[in-house]
Image 1: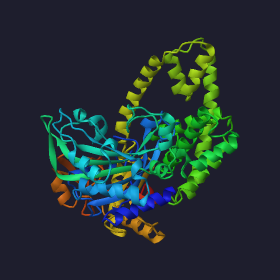
Image 2: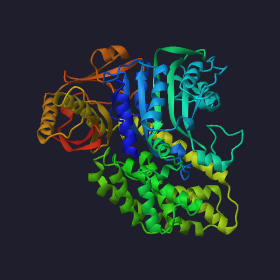
Image 3: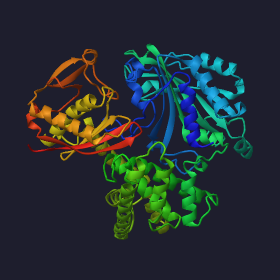
Image 4: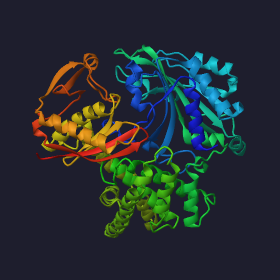
Length: 598
């Protein structure tokens, strides 16, 4: 069964049960300063778990969310971890709960995907004295009634079967929400036979016998001032299942790199390197890292990110250079493999990201330029290394950071020299750098603004006019999905299913300029959050607001909850021009615009 088939079966299964298919969020959340990338399907939905109505009007939702998790980057190379993945998700916002969710997902796995019930193991929350929350007897009973025998049901504590955005209960701030969960694992019988496992093996073991394929989170608690947990007014369900892992289970193959989303990349690498994927573990690992990192890099680049030394651009650079490093270990010294790999990723995802076809050439150019920079970095790095007799941690980090010289190669050189290396010293220097970067990123990404210069403030104000104009010309369901603003231009992402016609673009542009010419006053009022929303002020659904918010008005044309900054009158803006309109993802469009002096 292909990935496309599994994804579609999932959508159809939950649509028949009253779920609305919603547009996934962009991979790059420019409006959220707390994170660089979307890491799971529930991330954009957090505000709705506390009772805020979803913009779709539905309480039962389903989608497939492209996600990126960098904490797994060092694990990539085994048969189950990737940085980029798709997360199939279904949610109940105060509608159904455990009694419906667990039987539904069991039915989907066994009936729709045809997984053997004898290969499914589950886990439930065993209770926690510190929180006062007892064992999840309800989920335990449901699983038993569905036919899962007691010996295939395991109970774990908060470290395995508890979820909140901030981690385990003790680390949750007052007011944060969370809840216990129930995970599903698929057992690979052939791996179990090869391992000759003993009584100590269990579903959360890392031996390879089990693969987690889904997790139903029951978000029902809110942390109180005294550290206790109070039940929310509504009980929520958040299910997440990795598409790649589900396909591996369907194909009864523990190696997710042999599914249709990744295997074509492995085949290209095998052909170019003249090496066999399964010849030895080092070869397999290098090929997996190349396949994973190039796929993730293409997905980041399709959202307009360029390799750089800052924020998302830094991650893109790191993925590309790490992939190129392992390409060298396969004797792929020249970067001619880039065209084939980028092309294959674009082809593989043409069903859900049709815009990749138009962006392929641009992405390839950016990757080739980065490959050239990496070659230069290696040459410069080797020159610096030749200047020192012994590589200490501080010097190594300087070479690593200044020239982009890979740590893996530094360690190999130290080993060849027969020297010892103080990795702890290197990590201390790296931590200092990361702390500085985090502080810079937190300020840079606040509201998607590059800085607070007058030019940036003018363009930020123009996004309010653009948002209002799009809602008037297209429809009132248009919502901002992200923005990024520099002194030269604005980039505005919004929800819409179709390409805008030239007439629509002209109407939007003319409407904005008409409002600018009216010399409208830009003012704000501090209001209670609920009162602001009730007044009709537009709010960005993935922002977390305090009890008091600023509501900015531009005449009677625009009214938005926003932290600012803004100009005081539209007469300061000049003439607004739309530079380009394009697709970002399914159901999400992007407009690039600029202001010219009047």
